[in-house]
Image 1 (cartoon, one colour):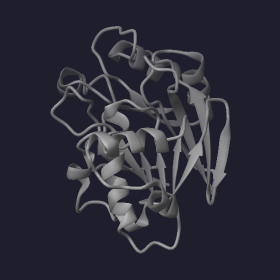
Image 2 (cartoon, rainbow, N blue to C red):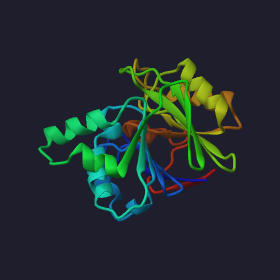
Image 3 (cartoon, rainbow, N blue to C red):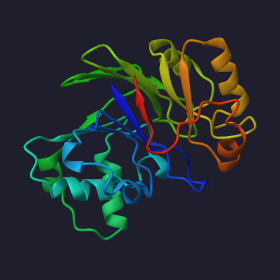
Image 4 (spheres, rainbow, N blue to C red):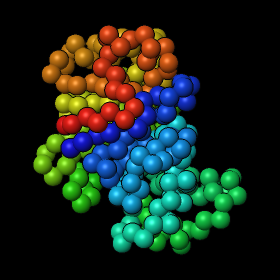
Length: 235
């Protein structure tokens, strides 16, 4: 399994928002502005799955642009959009706000929407995807573990604080892309000291810090394992 880092920042940073590409065919989160960043780097015709951890703009706001691209491709398969609630509804709201003429019939021809709530899992072709409850500022927010047909797996925390769902996700995999938004404790995100503590507790696991403000990215590279944009992590 190969995971390409498309972005490692968040809204308030000068880097692309956190987004990942698994085996060139599965996107994990599609934040605002990411389509501009990955244009020419990603073969969109290979995209078969889109995972969304939650519906904040820095995790899904470019979905409508990606869907426009998908609807223009001569694919003989439907792209599966997997999220903790039906992504079609916020997608259609975005089209309405942007005055873009896209219709459900056309979208349903090219995409399949799969609701994966926390505590459940789904098998899609060569992958098993498990969802765990993340504690953030909105209700429908999950962490994911993605396992391929060879048993290789990887976890994505999305946005969360320390919570039971995060710990269950961590126990399931040895490679985790983890929210490390802040330098100090927060009521919505993990911070540097919490991730450092997790690295000390689980010495054999790899915690890749992502979703960082610039201060974390610039000043904590000795304490954290920070992947750069365009890095490819082999699982």
